[in-house]
Image 1 (cartoon, rainbow, N blue to C red):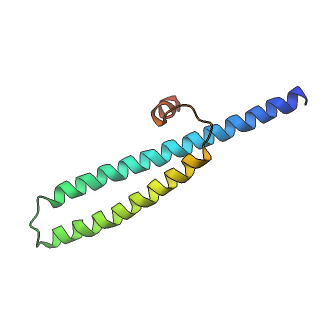
Image 2 (image 1 turned 180 degrees about the horizontal axis):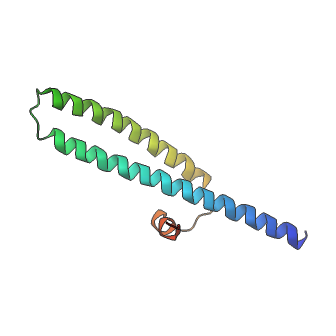
Image 3 (image 1 turned 135 degrees about the vertical axis):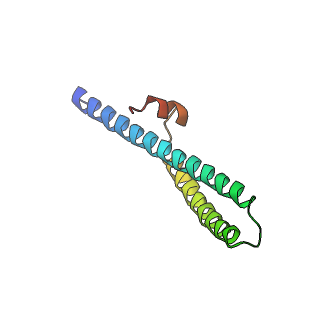
Amino acid sequence: MSTQGTKADHLAVTDRRNRDERELVEDSDRLVESIERLRELEREKRTVPMSSPRFRELAEEIRRLASLVFGEAASEEFDAKQADDIDRSIDEAADAEPD
């Protein structure tokens, strides 16, 4: 195999690994944001009268967001199964990304 082919192969693997890392960081960021929002909504719901329209609105919004969280978790799980050669954590990968 030529040196050029080896370099090209290495670049392709590095590009794929970087893409996989970015996807996992983005998946995790979305999941954390959604869970934090879910927590905020649930805390608010605990402060309003249970028979109020606002309580019902919050309950519906919480249900929709919880469903979204399951989808985001499934996406992260799928991406994790594709990323079989990443040795650093999501936090390490996120810290290494340019702002």
